[in-house]
Image 1 (cartoon, rainbow over the protein chains, first blue to last red):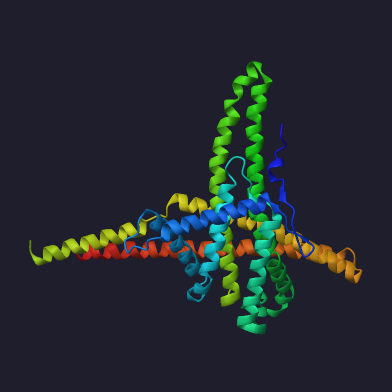
Image 2: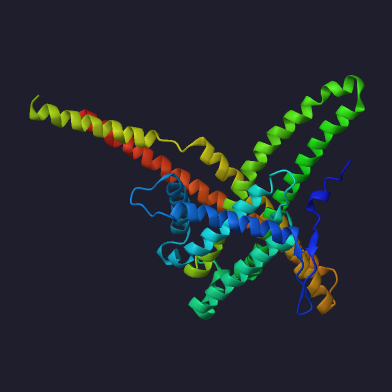
Length: 248
Length: 118
């Protein structure tokens, strides 16, 4: 029987090298392209006719957009308007990658730490850059919570710095771990169906049990795929808020 | 129907609206989603902050030759960082809940006052 980890293997379709770096076209790249074209098709279908009274597709696109606008406003405030396109793109891309990964025989790009860590690093560098550009040295006040008695600062400042430095890791590992664990679980339970059926005799009649579990886990995974995309976008908002408004 | 009658109807409607708003509870599915989101977030932060603290301490130990003291110190600081994030989240949540309850009580009190007036 196939190993439950086989689904995460990277396959090279064509070898390509750019300036000495390996830039082969892999299944990860393929599924990112699929996700991008799906998003493009969705947006195109929704915005082809920009009617005053939206049709079905347009209403879908608009409500998704309104959802992100609400999230950005709630977490960053009016200064966050400039970041709505970024958060919207990020949320939609991760959401579509998570959801198409649930189709049989597909590949989940977000189940690779390399991908999620690249997202998180980009966000971290962006947050630090924006913080320094907007506040200069005052950006370091982020590590000094207000109303702290000074003897405690010796303890609090290193704690705040560690907490800040762990942000890109928490952001990336949460998405990666949720997707990977869910897919392994699904594969293992689906494998039980086959092995029980192959065992023959009385055991063969037990095969509906893991089958039902697989269906239940699939529903859970669908929820996790959406929630994790939401959490990723939400935390990006919260981190950007720290850089923009210098608040805790 | 006379004017005072209409006014009373309106007041009654107003009071019922306020009571309904105070009673309004968020969609349980929404709460479950955000609770799931928050729990994965804070659990992860405690684990990762501890590891990052330990890694920083370990690297400092290698540079300064103080094995193993800084690694232990920073591991504990990392653990503290994770828990401080959790404490802050719990405090925020409690404050929000208390504010909600207070608003609900005030709405109820004002609707009771209105009824007495009638």
